[in-house]
Image 1 (cartoon, helix red, strand yellow):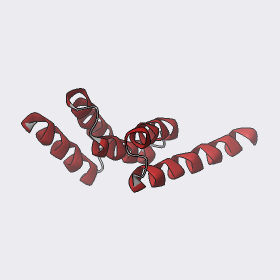
Image 2 (spheres, rainbow, N blue to C red):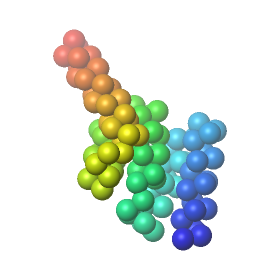
Image 3 (cartoon, helix red, strand yellow):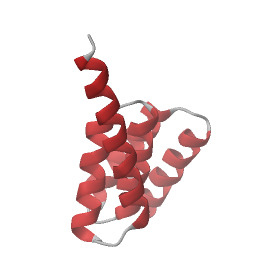
Image 4 (cartoon, rainbow, N blue to C red):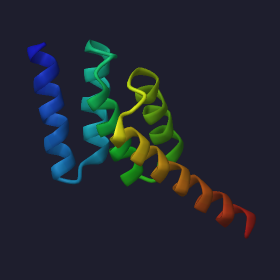
Amino acid sequence: MEKFKRLKNEGNDFVKMGEYDEAINKYSECMKLNAEECTVYTNRALCYLKLYKYEEAKQDCDHVLQIEDSNIKAFYRRALAYKGLQVRKKNMAGI
């Protein structure tokens, strides 16, 4: 559990510095230690959103909502992911 906390805190620090790829790596390592901790999924979803990886963000949020069906952050970040996917779809249609 101590390693999990350390990795999560390192991920949070990377987010604060805008190092989203590094944060994703830390959160992914956390998931290997505890796949049921929803916070690391919503945190990783935030990173994916910042990197315009909307499908990945949506998948993380979907996972959280299967565990906690009333997780507000997961709903909000999934909505942002859907919005990003819609914008991308419209842009592709215009090409």
